Length: 235
Image (spheres, rainbow, N blue to C red):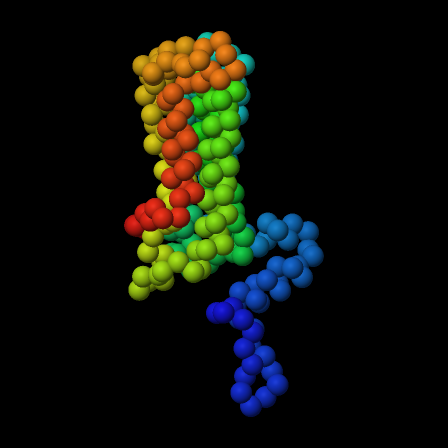
């Protein structure tokens, strides 16, 4: 492995890789606020992505408390594109500054899960996907996003690389593609196609199996995220 310890020829010294040096410094730092000290500018931008996701969820909760105020629902939807902006900028800043922390990739995945997994599911609940079957599919959608991000963290080092060292493709659709569902819901809200007026109505109304057929968009999105055979070229 690239980050393994290599012995120098001719003596008993060992050469420690830069990643191992970072890990030793990270685990041996016991100063106050040592975690904050280890973060770089790119990491703080990643946290802004997570902040957008949290604010979207809070706005969804506020809408559920007062469903006559659609501005809160618009806010819930509106925060997610800003999350995408910060998700794009953190990597750009890390490359420009040539600095990244050990936690950068983990922070990025966790922030993406909040902004592009949990937040869209909360918005979906707000617009009317509230039956037990609807909720089960939304849970499946979020767990697919979680699994997809975990797989990416494990396999990214082994994916084929181009000349610049970047992965040539994604396995499964990247989780930010769920913004297409958010924009779709924004259109429904604009048309006032929410709650009892969701597109394609409801099946099995009044039974335990009641659900909205349009919720299958979230099911398909989840399936696409965890697909291994679906390769999305990386731009």
